[in-house]
Image 1: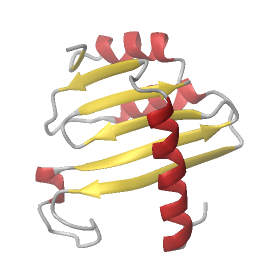
Image 2 (image 1 turned 60 degrees about the vertical axis):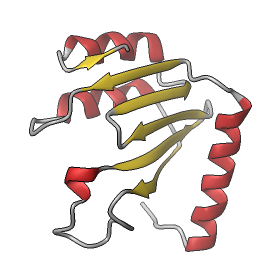
Image 3 (image 1 turned 180 degrees about the vertical axis):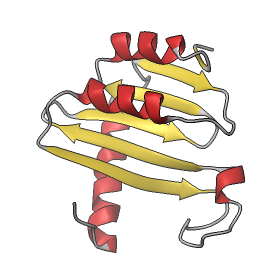
Image 4 (image 1 turned 135 degrees about the vertical axis):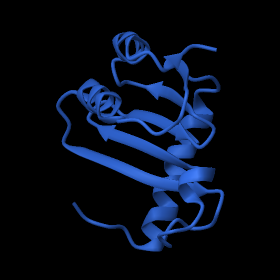
Length: 125
């Protein structure tokens, strides 16, 4: 694991957002009911759907309460957005602060949708 410098992070975000724009609608959009629960089954399903990868990026892109660095802020109550990308396969998804996941490429999205919906708190709109 390594952390990116600010200019590298900005470049990565621009690159990933450009890829999102090139595909105007996501392959899959799911919504979930947020709350205090163990999200590890969903995280494991998302991670497993990537398959074998040589590189993965988690880009923290947005936080309603600020930059997300201060513990004890309202971050958990207000939310955040993150871009997740993995290679090979140019896989890309957005985890949104408004309880939504958008899959633009990869992540074995048809079977991932089934697995997440079976957890009971994910749904299509």
